[in-house]
Length: 104
Image (spheres, rainbow, N blue to C red):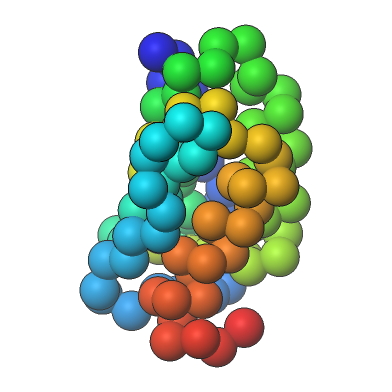
């Protein structure tokens, strides 16, 4: 297993206090837990993945996600079992949309 940590500063969008879970860990999939946290406007993302050596791809996918959503004071935990970048983006978007009550 590999653990990766990313931090994005100066987000604009706050999440409600309720944590949100999206997806299920199984072969080729992942789960995302997203929650509000006092991080001085930052968004932190921790990934635990079985696929080692893909840090640059994770950084690109997560940078694109943060550019879309601009999350502030958000903590995200991802448990991955080899999901493709498209599945990662989908699960992240689903978690944020659910946390925001379906508001894009």
